[in-house]
Amino acid sequence: MTAAFPPGYAASMTRMRFHQTTLAALALALLMGAPVLPAWSQGPPAAHRGSSLPKTPAEREKTLSDLYALLATADDEETAKAISDAIERVWLHSGSPTIDLLMERSIKAMSDKKVELALKLLDHVVELAPDFTEAWNRRAYVHFTQNDIERALGDLRRTLALDPHHFKALDGLGQILREIGQKKAALKAFKQLLDVHPYWSGAKQAVDELEREVDGQGI
Image (cartoon, rainbow, N blue to C red; front, side):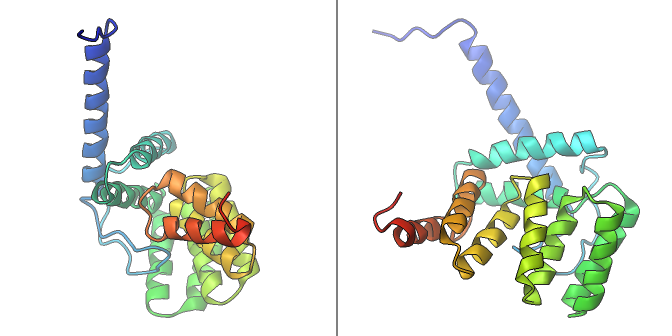
């Protein structure tokens, strides 16, 4: 017997495929900008800005929401990597030339091992733009490199309060919590990370190991 599909099913599937294709195209367009920085690193600043980046806070929020949805349902690691790279491009784009310049200078300072200058610049950014998520994440990394765990955790939690889907902040939080012995909290962070980015390197292994350590036979 041939299954009967509900009315409008074909149209719904067509719209869904169109939406997925549009999001994939958006991710590709965003990737046409400068190189994306690796996890929790402070490499060279972006060479130039992509014209496809969102122009307003509302556009930025919608773009990130769509890309996060696409990332959570990515079919394979390669696709997830392309989407996450596009997300990182949006993270670094504040929409303010002043903030973007300060961020680029802070990244350059870290690349040149001028940690105090990088921290000073990031302090200025969070004062000028307290809702700019990536500044808190970057400052957390700087604190971490200086073994200032308390401030690093504080900035990571601020990052995640602004953007609960920030997968690099979740990874940093999980790593630090695990390192200081807060295994249950670390396990929670890594599980949240997998929900956001199912192909994040090392996250599944961290969850498996922490489940054994916390409960012995898993949770």
